[in-house]
Image (tube, rainbow, N blue to C red; front, side):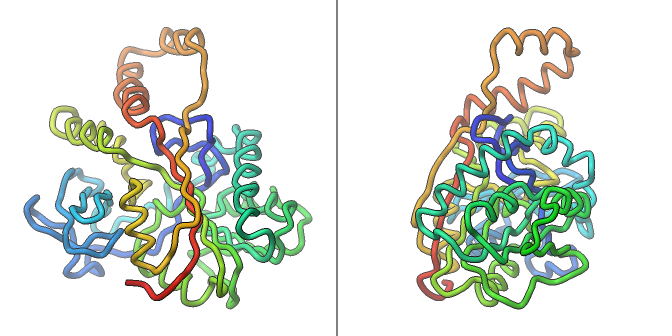
Length: 331
């Protein structure tokens, strides 16, 4: 879920509140006319804004990455028939368990911001991860809450985190359905970037699960132009695995910048109430960094430099948090 405000290794860094990907499976056959293009010149429909203006910018065996000329966002289409559910196992969530104190700190900061615009009511945490944010939401006065995820490992951790909390429902999105009710707040804390078939998910949530006047809170990585240029150069001159890492294949499927995020909101009739940019990099001493480098192999050190440290310098404010409200029909 949410990334640590103080920490990270590029925009995909898994710090914060223990999130994961939430998918709506869609195979290459189901994509139909929107299936990945074979040519970099062919334009396909953008998963962010819906415009037929996206062209191929990176092609690997795992996925194809597209850049949209309208909203300027990036999105990935996984190889035909491939889903990334299984990537979110106990090992994936170990990093969140190890950083639980940071998760609590970030969750409290986010809930403090949220209470300024929606002080109470019910909350749906879509992509609830290990449940730290969901538990603290109850302490901040939100009630009759629901956490939803596609990972059994995440939901198991959330059940342990919530313990004896009684008014929280957990839903496995792979085997169950969301409750047939509306929520005052829907949160996507480092989960929206993982969703396949995002348009269908957003449409369902807005039409059936967001209460009138309700708010949506989204926290997601931010990709600036320097980072995009660097990723393109890496794709051209370095082994494909390096570019895959920079584009966060296969985990993150949507990479926003401010423009793409605002266009995305406009598509669904959502008005921005607040938009914050943050750096998610962990503060570490140069001595500690030097010790780690000396213990690491040259190959590991080089990969860390190319995939983590250099992107961090190019894209310092690598995270965005937005709070929006519905103001009209989607466009």
